[in-house]
Length: 406
Image (cartoon, rainbow, N blue to C red; front, side):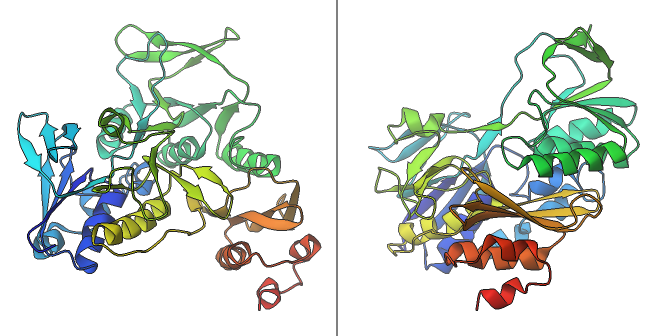
């Protein structure tokens, strides 16, 4: 490995961790990270929160400072990779240059889903994915009075909360009957709807958008029911799609993500992948999963780096996520798909501290913990170790859940 070159495509969370983990696993050769943004890898979750609000700068969000990469002899190259020649082990870049690799890591992440309707190209229509997106929104909110947020997922809600903190009037449009419908139980959707409505966010459920109104600048949105909502800023948050095209054209197997095994290995022995662009079989849930999660990206990157160094480390961590809105920290452990019982611990109706436990066949499979970090950690152990505990015990706050796991 001393004279070998490892190249990482992307400058994401996964890319940053993979570059560092390569050194930690003993890689002595060159390491080159190629990113198409002008910044070193940075934390993305704060973009819709503290970065949008102006509380933190891009320098505050860097995962590691430039001096760290220099000390570790990790080269950062700004560029865009057009193609992978697997036979010659050469990458073609948009500027016409080429770079050779011995081992390759694909950490291309995901991109926003675009809304293809009339008016979507007007000035004042924005997305939330990278620093440039947020910087554009920051300029617009200097004069904006009313924003329309399209999409009631976590990104939409976090962005709405940040805008309200800055005094911007917000209307949120969701096509489904409730916000967070794909990811949480109705009781949690109702809770978050109440929280946002208490902050004067106007939530519209079952609302289809017909077009965005304006000549050159956004003036409002026309809904399918004929109603018009005035706006000088429209932010779209309707999900993401994995950046797999580069891998797919190169003959790397893809199915809703770059297919990798538990070691981060693709169907090419010289190529690994990690992060939002990948799909991996999850042994706990016994199905193929593509996760959009910082924790998943980091852990996959660690095992992928070990694989490139000829070591065998497998990734079997449980999926976990978080969301910060106003004074509420939500921590999620596990995936609740297919749950058949929901147990609430705490006062969901009148407090901002409770947990929702999801069971399938009386086995805990996921938990949403609102301002309850200890219950998040306990749930992680219960799910990971398949500990059998009567669901009724979770509802009784006098029951010490930690004691039941020992």
